[in-house]
Amino acid sequence: MSSNATPPSRPATLEDVARVAGVSRATVSRVINGAASVDPALRRAVEQAVDATRYVPNRAARSLVTRRTDSVALVVSERRDLTVSSPFVGRMFSDPHFGRVVSGLLEVLRPAGVQLMLMLADDDASCDRLVGYLRQGHVDGVVLISQHAADPLPELLAASALPAVLAGRPARPDLPIGSVDVDQAAGAALAADHLMARGCRRIGTITGPLDMPSGRHRLDGFTAAAARHGRGDVVTVEGDFTQHGGATAMTALLQRRPDLDGVFVASDLMALGALPVLHRRGRSVPDDVAVVGFDDSSAALACEPQLTTVRQPVEEMAAEMARSLLARINDPQQPALSRVFDPELVVRRSA
Image 1: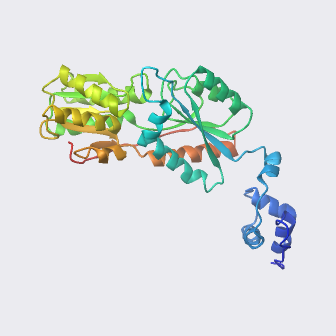
Image 2: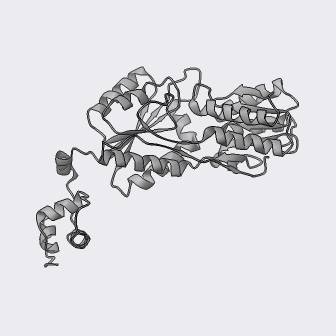
Image 3: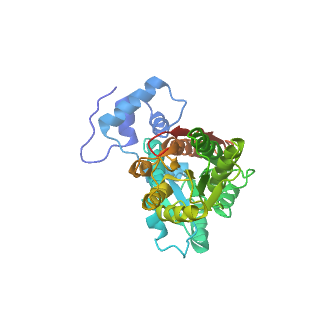
């Protein structure tokens, strides 16, 4: 490696790095831009020279060449419900699931030098503005959290040239968009099997919204497994994946089946609202009523008693979404791939 003297009065340039590394400017450029064909010894020399000169890449200039922004959008698409008093943004940030998704994405994006932008779409106007913004090339790709079957965004993104990956399976199985999900039906079946093994016979479930694929798949998986155990009479009340919704749905469930002895609540956050209703009705958990949730989020540990639940590995799933998206950004010709993770039953004190 050559002399590492660099004038202190100005930032280091590619030429400075090349001089210190003893290589050409073109080799330095290839290393900094992530070319895979550089000899490992030359790559190490350039990386050492970058450290020695404290060279900082000019991302603005680089983006003119690569047409990359080094940023991706996390788009949360949730239609505004005017009947719900709490604002959509407040409900989103209070849901532990969202924080786990962000954590898993950043685990992969940060080391890659990619920034994460949060964007919201809660009505038709904001959806139109968002699609226009994305099509103008402000980001390199999109991670989309879209839970309702009627949402137009998955189809709009699939039809665009922008790399995208969906959190959860698309409502249309033939939609050419990458996706990452947990096996929702298999997870709900684990809950049913556990309640049956405990001897529960008068069972019910608080579902998620049934216009969401996750809500429908969890219900279908639970009722199918219960039927295999000879329990085709599952009492069902629809919830909304919120703590308040869980309390409301549990009240309705007890009205319909006062002698309930086992409940599958389709999210931990709803279970956090449902358990106090059982306590106020004098029903001991798990002695009188066994309760199983879904997610294995921080809400499961906040429940009293702590919640037996179906774990979906949210951080690992989000990291897989980020890796899949970066692969599509680096090679747009790659096919849109989908991956489904296995769920796991986590037994605690509620069942």
